[in-house]
Length: 197
Length: 198
Image (cartoon, rainbow over all chains, first blue to last red; front, side, top):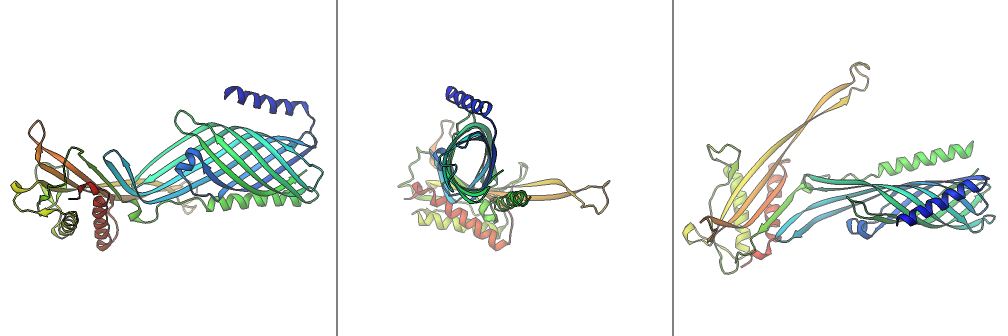
């Protein structure tokens, strides 16, 4: 995993340093999420709370290099649930929260940059701050951590006017497990506006 | 210029929207009620259906020099609910402890927590007097139901605990709603302890 992450960082940095800047591209997106894996076991409810900001410097027509900052909050109430461990049982209402903030270096490849409909795919690598909390009765437990994170992405930009467009994308965030926390992964479905300047 | 304005407006709109939608958590007192139960796996409940229970509930105060009891009205509501659940699980109440397979002992614990925090005067007294203290407090309570096995003595000759249930929550609201919550918690203690059935 460390070798893979190092290779990704070197790849992105090398593109950044070798190519000349031409155009900037920014995008603000509303983000919805579906937790998977361990996070999905913790909160299975679909999330409508999230936002992402993306910046790409277009090094060529096809390649954009930059960063992503995102925020997705997952929340679920478990009403009247009984949790059993051996001979012990505990019943009550649980309130589960998970807040995830990925901060990633990212590169996109735009397949049809001169077309009004421009599909693309991309990859992000960086870190993700996660905070999880459980309110159970009068008691609260929480944990937070910084994770190493990866994000593959596919999407499409639809140009609506010169320099502006709408983007629709699907991203899969994986924040790898740390000493204190399990893996945090989720699918994010984004829709937003794109500016080219 | 228009694009820049639009961009920042959208950013502000998204932040406002997402912040406004941040989950709030529990809204009602009963959403903070918890019921815990545990049992001794070596206890045989089936076929041992006689139980004894005193008609009072001890209030644990930390002062061991004198015993304090929960007031009679509240105690009756609690004890009646326990009897109802014991009966529905096939147990028979006996009034001579020597004839009982199990004895039920009930007790309560209360704790009050007080917090002090500081809030802003909002400029009313000027910048030099920015904060005032605000106090808040809440009281929590636990009802502890202990089922003692009269047959199975520990190596030291003491009676062993066969089953324990603890109902915990905030002591808030009207008497009627509080009593209702306590009864619901007692019912839940039995619901999650179906191994008690005769």
